[in-house]
Structure formats: structure tokens, C-alpha cells
Image: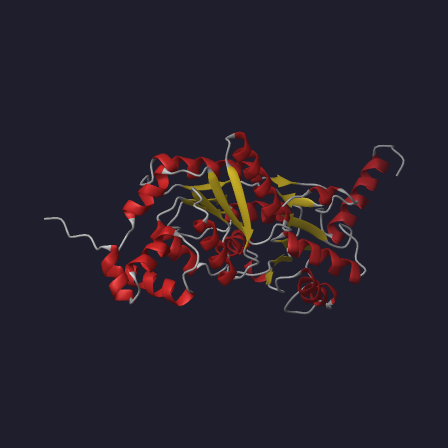
Length: 362
């Protein structure tokens, strides 16, 4: 015998609210207080209530509107993802409502509620570091959701991102192949799973080369200024028996790249003569001033395309298994990655010697 399904009336009773209030919560309507909404969601979770019939009714009444949640539209990666998703939506007669979380879990939760109240057909979200409340509410609404870029090791919802560990292994191996042995990886935070995966890829490559003890991971902070202030002492410190100044820096985000470039300027160093630089994320401004910056390029157009495909497929088959896409991120070698200073000088001397032996002018 199948188990009896919990009713919304039982959820309302357990939460101590009216039936109308409980219904408004699951319909995404505005005007429900935060405390009442919390009690309703907690009661639903405790009773195992899933508003299938309400969700089915919403799916039959499509708005052809998609909600897109990003931390910051000024971040170039998120900006590119927004642009690609909007272009796809426009081509298929959908509208996109864009909201920002500003890295604030409470703001993220509130903005998602606002999107649900607008009866969006689905959500694409680049989550904050702690989005548990948002995730719980989206589960209760059973709305199609795709997690983009900032994915976790095991996502409940479908997810799309680059293979972050593989990308940083590739970049680290590039620097090692140039002769670098003292490397620093600069990342703003490891609280995000994709950032932690980038660190792990860096360390894996250094371990494989037998250089784990010479690998340095720097966590200077979330802003450009914090990064500049945190990296500058490392670049200007005298070599010691325990640690040498890095001959190459690999940055794990565009914010880290900007902070490191400012630290290099303050240290009076030249790239790549004194220090090689490899950036995670490739943008137009990396090739505006010389030297052009080597970078790991995230395929933002492909990421957006997969996210859209998975989301719209869920409209027709909401119970399909969650799909998790991890895309390769290519290395674009430009002018900021070169052999370490000592090796570069040795190579120049060797070339001059060979030219002399061959009869060419030195």
C-alpha cells in the first residue's frame, strides 16, 4: 500500500499559519512575513510535503520568463554569462529577469523569492558561498533550476561549470615546463567549491612534479586592494632557507589578477623579466597593454548554452536525472609566461654562443 501524501492543510496546521498563508508560500507570492515563511518551509520539510500539484499548475501556465541570479554583473565572467543567456533567450522568445546577490546569502534568498513571485518558468543561479536557505526554498517549489559556474562536488540540481581542477593543473604544468619551481597560487577564498578545486589542481600538479613543499597558496582576501596588500610582502621578501620568492604567480580569479598586477607595480618588478604571471579567466583587457597576459579561458558561451539546454529540457521532463556538465578550459599562452630570470639569461647566453660558433653575429 502506498504511503498517504501529506496535505498543505497539515503543513499549515504544523506551522501555525492559515491555509492561505501556506498556499502563498508555495505559490511564491509576496506579502508573507519571513518568520511565517520559515515556519511553513520547516513544517513542509519535517512532514515531507512536496507541492507537486501546485508546481504542475505553474508549469502549465508558462510565462516564458527565466530568472537569472548572479553575485555581481561587474564581474566579467558573470557579465559574459548574462550576455550569452540573454542572447539565447531572445532567440527563443523568452525574457530574462536578472537579479544580483552581492555575495549576500540573505539578499540572494530575497531576490529568488521575488523571482518566484513573478512566476518565472525556471532559474539559473550562480550561488553565494552559503545558499542553503535559497536551495531549500527552490526544492520546495520544485521549479527547474540549473546551478552555473559555482558548483559543488555533489549538486542536488543540475550544474554546469568548467573542470576547475583540470584547468589549474594545465596552467601549473605550463609554468613547470618553462622551468619554474617556486610558484604561488593566489585565490580570494576556498569557501567556494570551484575555488577549492582550482587550488587542488595546482597542488596536484606540484605534487606530481615532486615540488609540493615549494608550492605556495595565498588567500589575501576578496577585493583587489586586499589582494595587492597581501601579495606585495611575498614579492618583496628576501629569500630564506625555508621559502624563496616565487618566480611565477598563477591567479585564480580576475579580482586576484588585478590585485597581483598592482602588487607587481608597487614592487617595481617587470613581467615576465622578474616574474611570470598566468591568470585564470581571459578578458579583452588582458591584451590591451603590453605584455599580453597568459590566461586560462573559461568557455562562457558554451557554459551558457549547456545551462539553457538543461533548463528548457526540464520544462518538458521535470523528473529527468540531474545532468552535471564539466567543460575543459583552454590555456592561452601569451607574453607574461616565460622561463625564470636565471634560466632566461642562460638561454640568451647559450644562443649568443651558438650564433658565434655558427659564424653569425653574436
